[in-house]
Image (cartoon, rainbow, N blue to C red; front, side, top):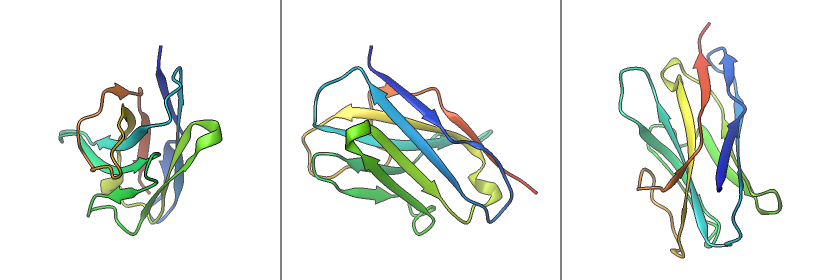
Length: 125
């Protein structure tokens, strides 16, 4: 019954920006972390960012640091991923995932238990 729904993907030219959203429902706990992942054609799924509600900490993969910004709106149970300076290699399906945890910090790419359906990001001229 817990659900994660991503939105905000689309087609954008190199150098453009997108803001992805992940809205969670069907739970009551205040202690959880949200991770963003992406999977490009022919490649393994890659963790790109995470955020911990309990500790309010964030982390990023080296490949996206400085261009991606993760944030949250606790009242809406929504996590955002702002993506700037998009590159063709950012093209992928982007997924959000959730786990319940009391840890202070999250780790990019670690195991998560609940997953959304994904949203397609395509960077092309």
